[in-house]
Structure formats: structure tokens, C-alpha cells
Amino acid sequence: MEFLLRYIPNAYQVKSDYINVNHQRIKTLLVGSSHVLYGINPDFLTKEAINYGNVSQTIDIDYNIIHQYINTLDSLETVVLRLSYTTLFEQLKEGDESWRIKNYKIYTDVNLESKMKHHFEIFSVKLKYNLERIYNFYILKETPEFVNTSGWGTHNMDYKPEDIDVLSAIIAKKHFAKNDALYADNFKSLETIIQECNKKSIKVLLVTMPAYSSYVEKLDSLQLEKTIRAGTLMSVNHDNCLYFNFLNDKRFGRQDFIDVDHLNTQGAEKFSKLIDSILTQ
Image 1: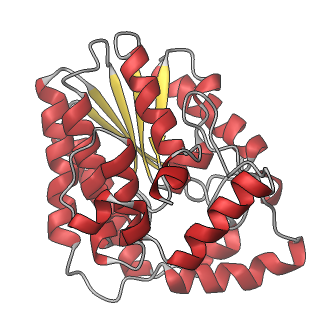
Image 2: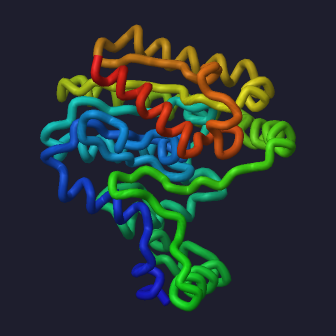
């Protein structure tokens, strides 16, 4: 079963292979959660780029990725890093999706703190889900949700317009941080990323990405204020960092989103071109 599971195509392997092959040409490293994974398509960036965003990837993992690859990406000029509403208040290892750590341990060279179970598919994921994955891929010949060659997520599920406002309330509640227990560590990780990039003369573009209006209206004002303040502080205190807040950007409407906080194919093209205009100034 372990053998069969490891041979099912996955996004982590694609990204790792792309970096290993193109490490001398990559100019831009895109890092973050699913917001980056689905929201920035390197195909629309002028300079060679890799999208190293992943579902539920948190800032402590972003740090490990950047810390490792700034020493091997010989031509790296810019790191694009998302600063989402949840970024400073969560860590993958502390949440319900800590099983995803196995994807980094098995399929990439990223060095993360992990448990022994994270070195195996069969110990990280429940048996019924692993059986389902094997059946879907080997029997039904279904292709798993995937990425293009440069790491952008090709998933494009959409919600019906009448569901969007209800979904906004549900997701906003899910993203609300119950406490600030992880804030200090995550703030330090963010600042350390910028400092390490500065030592290598690498610029950091910190972005809060667009979200659907009814979702933004339901966000906790204090949590959002702390997030935006952190981005502003980084930009003010570090010469190599610029912060852009696109959360309420009116250029993005319902037609640009998969759900309430993830861009679809059209939205990703629009946002990627916007990012490219900043990177090429």
C-alpha cells in the first residue's frame, strides 16, 4: 500500500522536481497557503518563477522553505509571501491537518520538525482514505487534483452564487483565531524570513490577497488589524520588503473567486498580472 500511494502523482513532488531542475534560472519564489497555490500563476509572470504554495501551509513552513532554498536558487531576486488573515495565528503542526507534514517529509527536501509517522503515507492518513485514493487512481483512473509544471493549482471548483454569503459566514468563523498563542512565534518567523532574504539581497513582496466582499465584512476587526499592522511594520522597518493589501480590491468580484477567499483561473490570471506589474517596476 505504501508503494502504491507514493506513486500517485502529487503537487509536492512536482514542485520539488521543478526546483531541482530549474534552480539556476528561478528569479521569483512564491510561498504561502492555498491562497498562493490557486491565486498566482507563474505562467503570467515575466521572470522565471515557482509557486511553492500548498494547502494549509503555514508561516513556519514558509520559513523552512525559504531558509533552505535561498541558498540553492542561484538567481533568486524576489520572494512573494502571502500575509493572510490567518497567517500569524496558526501553525500546521498544531492543527487538525498536521498529517500534511508527511507530504514535505516524503516528497520534498524541505527539512521540517516531524514525528516518525510523517515518514509514511500509511501511518499519516486514515486507512479508508488511503484505500479510496488507491481505488480512484489505479481502478477508476481518476487524476488527482494537481498543479501545472511551475506549481500553480489547477483546481477550479465553484460555488453557486446563492451559497456564497452563507459560505462567507462559515469560513470567516472557521478562520477566527481563538487566541494569540502562536502570534509571537509567527511574527518572528515572518521577520526572520525578511532578514535572511536581505542578507542575500533578495526582495520580499508581502501581499494580503483579494477575498470576496461578504467574507471580508465578517472578519474580526482586531485580528485583521493585527495582520495589516504586521505587514505595514515589516515594510517600514525593512528596506527589502514591500507590503500590498489587496483584501478589499474592487478590481476583483464574484466572477474571480472559487469560493470566498480563493481566486479561480480568471482571478488568478488577473492577480498574477498585477503582481508581475509590481515585480517588473
